[in-house]
Length: 340
Image (cartoon, rainbow, N blue to C red; front, side, top):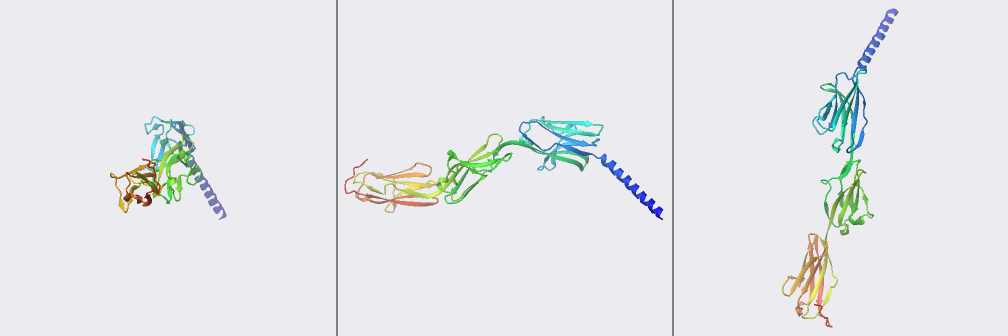
């Protein structure tokens, strides 16, 4: 009985060795990608090449393909063995075979690379209609920073006292660094002459924060890209009076003046005893915008009579509110010589 048991055990061991040897033989003859070029970072205009080494290639088809996740197929085949699938003059495919080892190297070359060449490239060994062996490498092409015209605003309008947030978007490789500056090297709202980061934030915007801001994108490739963003700050009118009391003699001319700061530009009117004054033979009203947010209004009275003495009101209004200022015209005790 012991002899029979030993013979069975020996038979099992021999059978296991035979199976292992058979599997080893099958495995050693199976195709495999033994090497592929590492990921590449290159500059625009350079020439590059990808190498893929396939063992036990036999008569199998080997191709290079570019991964295109947005397309339905998932990839675009560029070559099949030693034949190009796309007729791009920048492409070259070379098949170098070693019959002794039944291996081959497939070299795919691209001359004068462009930004559009960026992506993942796949070496594929086609085993069956639905089966293949693959290895992938990535090509990154350096290109200058470019600020997105569509996603980055040209201008922003904010009401005084509110917060403001502007985000600048830029593409490029390497990833761009973003910063902000004001025109004419003006001081930034938070202090200093530069703000680092893609987003510029201003808490409780003041009218002095209005003006031109530059988003600057740089990544060390080519020249930095710059984009101008104009910030407009809306605020309700404020009136300044240099001479609130005006003395003038009868039958002489007088001028009453008020200066209004507001944005948007205000409508400015003059009132007397609750009635709005109009330009006529006795009164002349002129409004002059002396700056982006300053309007000077002058009421000229041609020849003063007794009824002209008293209070006048300068009124300024825009969509955010209104303001009034009182000016008083009176007859002096001591005659004042006319300057007109």
